[in-house]
Image 1 (tube, rainbow, N blue to C red):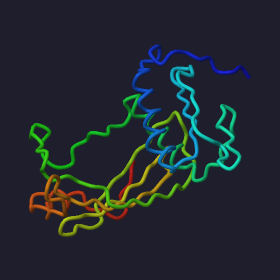
Image 2 (image 1 turned 135 degrees about the horizontal axis):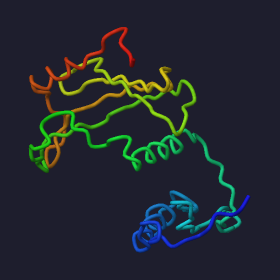
Image 3 (image 1 turned 180 degrees about the vertical axis):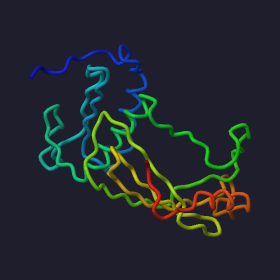
Image 4 (image 1 turned 120 degrees about the horizontal axis):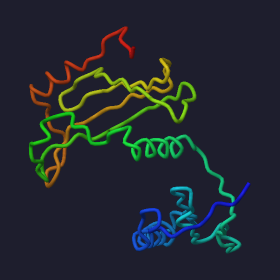
Length: 203
């Protein structure tokens, strides 16, 4: 197997100064702060390695520095793998992170207006998904409170459920007076239309 070819960040649409700021952030906020002993940042884009750098120590007691072939023990790999897969879908324009749930997109947003916050989320991966491939996500409201509501989600591929998620969304104020904000009657009516109906599914 051939080793990946290196290239400049700019050749892949990235910025060397921006990556330098990322490295400085890792060093200041994580290594010097004692949160991580060391880091290895590698970026692979468009078939090329466009950034590959190491900082800090692999072994603090022996003062052994992190090297490019240092082996890291990493737990809970579901989250980074799922995040990378989702970012690939977003990069290809197959998912949208900016879908407005409440209000009109023409309505200006105040810096101190209410916002929807994700309070908790629980995910369960039922079976392996296939990439590339299309995924349908079904979302329904299962509870409406004074300032919060619960969502149940399921991801389907080829008619089979591959993942489930339950989350709690909270309407909260931003700015000087941060805290929960009551849902309006109009918002409650909108949520009621999205309520879960037993027996419904894609297809």
